[in-house]
Length: 328
Image (cartoon, rainbow, N blue to C red):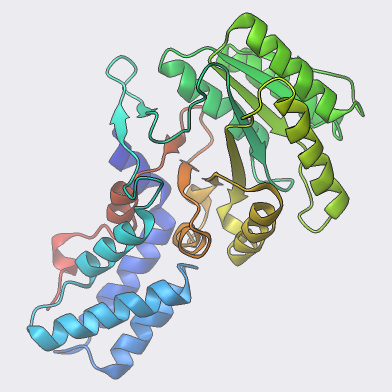
């Protein structure tokens, strides 16, 4: 299955809501009047796309209507969403390609920061229930598909089940897991995993952390302790701090992102469960406000359903429409 089709299938609930409502609004009369534009704005906001983005799309639509009698709301929305999501250190969107051997999307270096010398350390953070452990394994699978060696660290020591879950996932994707006992010091496990990754010369070390309640300062302090532990072995580690967010929580995901970013300096986002919500627009709202790039999105339950994020593909899938929905 191609990347665009994965995006389209995963975003189907959000896409159907948007296209159905937009089509109804633009086909109701010969022109888009004030009432129609207000409805359009409300429809966009209902997907948690963000008020600012919704207002901008409506303004662009209104301006286009003044300049000509032909207005393609879908094209305007796609262009604006792509523009807002296309940023990064270089000011451009990530390069996403397809691995010719596996047929899966490949996360090239422009998606993930790479350490000056191996291992590249990726720390996954987030509250319970967002899909951190499964995302850890799926990211490992994606990196292995590119020919990288990957080591996993089970640093969620607050739940015995989390350790076992990662071990099971590790077997499934073919990665060794460094783990300790339930209740062990997570920073010490991270240190041991870093030492093992260096000695074995693996390309990537991915650390699964406990589900931090973003309102608990003491838990955030423990996460900072893990940073210090890793830096004893590699001063630049972790090279990525990826925050895993559950898209079905809507604006609550934005609140989590604010707090985690302030405490940890998040470098990228993994947005999960987009296939189970009609509020996929939250991806746009978070990226716009916090200027944190979305690096991966979860579009299903299978091991290969974590995909490198591509703004253009996302925008096209979000506002995909059939020829009959083009209007005015």
